[in-house]
Each structure stands twice: as C-alpha cells, then as structure tokens.
Amino acid sequence: MWDFDEIVQRDKTDSVKYDLRTKLYGSKNIIPMWVADMDFKTPKFIVDDIKKRAEHEIYGYTIRNDSFFKSVIHWMNYKHNWQIKKSWISFSPGVVPAIALSILAYTKPGDKIIAQPPVYFPFFSSIKNNGRQLIYNQLKYDNGNYHFDFEDLKKKIDSRTKMILICNPHNPVGRVWLEEELTKLAEICLKNDILMISDEIHSDLIFEPNKHIPLASLSKEIADNTISTFAPSKTFNVAGLSSSVIIISNPKLKVAFDNYVNDLHIGFGNIFGNVALESAYFKGAEWLNALMDYLEGNIALVKKFIDKPGIKIKMHVPQSTYLLWLDFREYGLKDKELKKMLVQDAKIGLSPGELFGPGGEGFQRMNIACPREVLIKALNNLEKVFGS
Ligand SMILES: Cc1ncc(COP(=O)(O)O)c(C=O)c1O
Image (tube, rainbow, N blue to C red; front, side, top):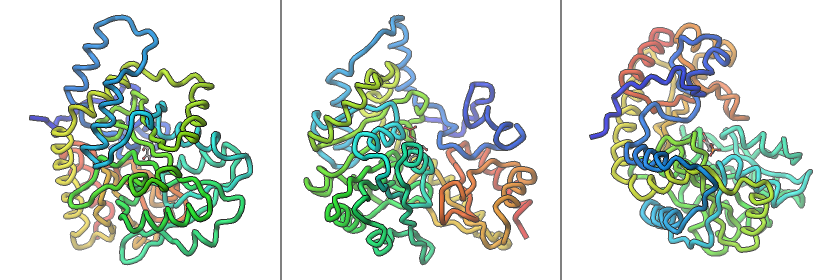
C-alpha cells in the first residue's frame, strides 16, 4: 500500500541532506545518513490535502481553526493516552525555536540551564547564544545503555539554575524514558524550582513494546512546571513545513510564551504547515504503523551487520527514532580519522558523535530512514572499511 522501497531523487531539490553534501563532506559522492529527515515520500493523504489547499490560489494570512486544535487533542489522546485541553495548545514554527523562545521567556541572561549530553546539539547553541550558562548533566552509560545521572544533577544545581532541557525520547541515544525515571527527574526539578522543557518531537517513533510517556502527563504539578514540544515533522517527513505545537497547562507560563510568539509576529505560521499537521494527526495512524514496521526491518538489518564476526562497531537497538547511535570506540581512532574513513573510504555521511557534546566521542549517529536498497549499499561500504 505504501512503498517505502521507492528511491526518490532528492538531489537538486535544495535538500539540506543531499545538496549540502559537498559543503559538509567535501564530496557529493556519499550516501547521506545524517540530518534527521526521511528519504520516504510524505504520505499521500498529506500531499493531497496540501494540493487541495494550494488549488485555492490565495495564500493570505490564516488562522488555525477548531479542527486544527481537535487534531492535536485527538493525536495526543490516541497516540499517548494524554488528555489535553484546547486552551493548553500554543504554536511555534519549530521545536528548536520553541526552546529558544522558552529560554527567552522564562530565564534571564547569566542563568544556568541544564542539558543532558550526548544530546541533540542545538540545545547547546540555544542556551549559549542567548547568553545563558550551559551546564552539562551527562547521561550515564552502563551495561550498554544510557540512564539519567541524578547524583550529578543534584550536585550541579544552585540558586542560578532555572531550567532543564529534556529530550524525551532521547536523540541520539534512542532511550524512551520510563515513568520512574521521569518522575524522579521531575521531583528534583520541582524541589529546586527548575522549569522543564520537554522536547518530545520523536515521541511518535516508538518501537514496541516501549511506551512514550509525555512528561507533563505524570501529574498536574509536573504539568504546571513543564513546557512540552511536539511536531509532525519527524514522524510524517514534513520538517520543511515548519509547524509545531507547544503544550503548556500553566496559564501564566502559557501567556508568557504566547507573548513572545506574538511580539516576534511568528504566530500565523505557514498555511501548508497547518494543513499538514491537521492531516497527519487525523489521518496518520495506519501509515505510521507501516513506517514503524519498515524502520524495524532496517534496524534488524543493521543489527545483523553489527553482529557479523570482524565488525567491532557496537549498537544498542534504539527504543525510539530512526537514528542509530553507533559506537566505533573499539577501533581506537581519533574522531577526525574516523570521519575521514567514513567519508573518503566508506563514502557515507554520518553525524559525528562529538557534536552531541561530552560522551559523544568515538560515536557516530546514523539515519536509517531510507529505502532498504540504500541501507544495504551503505552497510556493504562500511563492511569493506571496518570489517576484519
Ligand atoms: C530532539 C530534536 N528536537 C528538535 C529537532 C528539530 O525541530 P524543529 O525542526 O521543529 O526545530 C530535532 C531534529 O532533528 C530533534 O532531533
């Protein structure tokens, strides 16, 4: 019904992933497996709804109508068993902009903001470029898996610590945080009056039997101390349409956020982004199930490759996301040397682990949201270079 095997030319479409290859990797002749969008077509029901809107041929300022809000309420209930109210929903042109807006709205220059590396690196620039202090609370890596380091977190908190950026589920390590982990984290934050920004952009991409828990769904007290960010962009491959939803149940915090959005005059959003979001959240369930099956197949293929004798790359099968966190440390290479071998010899473009902050050294992030034929080619290339 949906053809995830179809290879779609993305070259010369102004695609970040394809058309920046020469700039970033020095050559166009690499398989791009870096930035987090997918090489699959956006589902047809979204494309059809966008075309229908486009045919009207007037693209003036628009509002988000009742049906937009209903789609968000429906999706949160259907997908995450979270009952939200229309009055909690705000808009942002993206999740990263929402993080930056939250930093501006709720903290002052010089305040300390915690991030938990290795983590999605725009968190760092959002904090530093807005004149706040970036404090690392590095994840613990034991038994081949990642955990919050609560003891380190408690030590890092002082009177200037005002905010924490939480990645739930976590990019790049693929963890889906458990209820007890999130509750413990939230308790520490509540006790110390630290506002929690929960980036839940990957929350629809969860592999069975894991279950995503929206941080703010844990209790009213936690909800009232949380800004939650969601978007259809990763799930339905519509990142270029710049539409995300921010869920804030605390009215005071919501007003402060909305004021920033309105002052910057970015609240209208994008007509086609609004259409795509509504279409995805009302019609996307079946397509998403098929996507998850395909992604699981791709991950199983990588696992089979990793398990081959002679391959020293390690991987913990992700609980979420199409981003694999590959551990190359057994090869004993410097990051620069590793990148050179990946680009020049294996001819694949991954995201270097050190970008994701402390704990990322020796790792590479691989985006496997591509047709299987492309993935097989990439794995064959890897084997030639990193096999025994
Ligand atoms: C954890 C995380 N947050 C945010 C984003 C980007 O969000 P946006 O494009 O809506 O700013 C990404 C994209 O890779 C991501 O992985």
